[in-house]
Length: 225
Image (tube, rainbow, N blue to C red; front, side):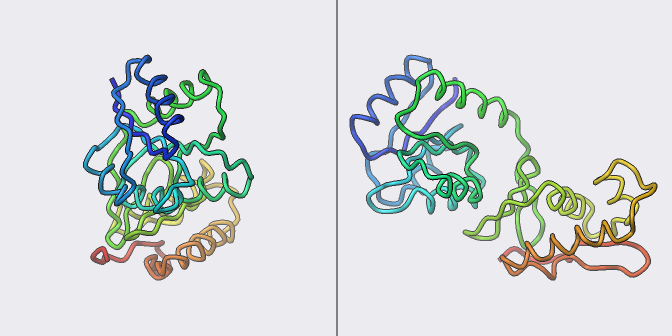
């Protein structure tokens, strides 16, 4: 059965969550020492992390970001913070789901089972040279930083990573994005590349994509920083 790590500073809530999950047959480990949480979780290598946001030493948002930069997940944020901006912030940092407390037991278990099914047999992060890319969620990791790409941005970057250092033709990318190379405005692909480069600029990676005149695009090879 799957191993779940709980990061929750409220002792009563922590015990309740442990009881619920253990009764469902999960192997559960709850973290009660909130110093260097990321290292503890990395050592435990859980199949899923149940993560609170309001923690005594470090924000759950920071922990989520660090875990994702190490390829650890899935992460389900379970918190009393119910503002939309908090949920969006958590998801943009790489959280795989977000629930607010108090949470219905059956809803919690359903979300956990869904995440475990989604990530079962998930491929490892793909090495892009100066970054890592999750091929399922299109989350990009550079050091301790992470960035969630849009679907089109992710598809383009994944194709470039998978073919590097070879050139990926414009027709191949158009087929990938729209399922056809016919009747697609030449500028449509360029617009998507421009958006991707603008997004990559947030991590100083905008120069990773090289345009090869008359042929297509390729990823520059670099060593991860």
